Length: 280
Ligand SMILES: [Cu+2]
Image 1 (cartoon, rainbow, N blue to C red):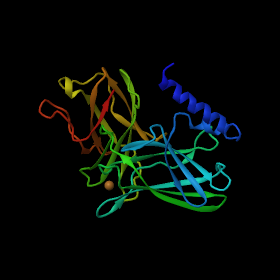
Image 2 (cartoon, rainbow, N blue to C red):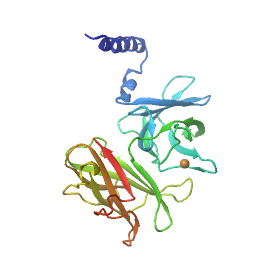
Image 3 (cartoon, protein in one colour):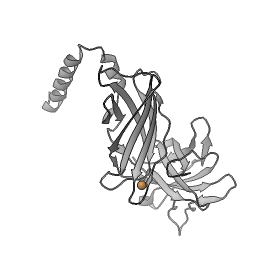
Image 4 (cartoon, rainbow, N blue to C red):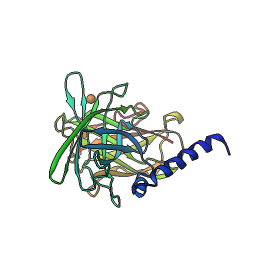
């Protein structure tokens, strides 16, 4: 057995032994595939934030949350939680699209939701996260700075539409693209105020995936993105005929058929001004 295999084993062994005396063994298992990003603490509670990567990146982040009582070290299972991500810019501050935070299905201690950071500073700075939560009718709050790293590929786009409104478009699925037809899921939000980014319903996003490295070829059997009122997101069939780097060219069209952003891909215009990137 290689040393690199033995070291993790030793850690797992030590960890299991040290945990075997408390009753949280099954709760530790709730963290399957999750890595802690950081803790937010006040004098009563510690809020643990988890993602699958252990980081926050620009774009769509599924985030899991646990609350620990600092005094009893037990997990709070009956909290109601709200979160407010804020980016401090030189002259103003703004938030970003986000979901509500709800109890994760079939989990005792985990709450979850998503936040779509539409931008960050090059060093990952700029964002803070406030968690407001209520336990047994008592309100608490905690705020701290967080680090949001720039995602390598453009998985989110923030722009002004021809209607003068600001929009955010974010890639949500496929997180693991395949050769063939992928279920493409995209979030569309409008910047109503600096702090409010409601879902935009019943618009359309046309889809034209291209491989710029290979003569800008497209693929067959794609469909345009349409709104799904069950998950409040936009869905389409995304056809990827080979692995590599793809640009998903989009056009945002409102319910009156007005193009708000983006252009057709032609011989002269190789890329829409509204696009998302994907590589696999
Ligand atoms: Cu900003």
